Image (cartoon, rainbow, N blue to C red):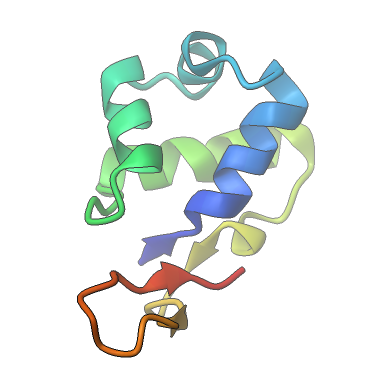
Length: 90
């Protein structure tokens, strides 16, 4: 399972005005873990974060499938092979 970082960040901005501490409290996860997940392109969500996002979506009446995917998301790499990391496509 994969968590869409862009969508999660948008949800944080909408619901908690971009405040990592407030959003982490809402999700019930460690703020450092949330920050690292959103800002580190190589990090992936573990079961605790995936479950927390699913519960939070249910609480707000949102479809968790807008944020959590069973398959790896598509990536776009526009760097011409010069070492640029792929970016998530939302």
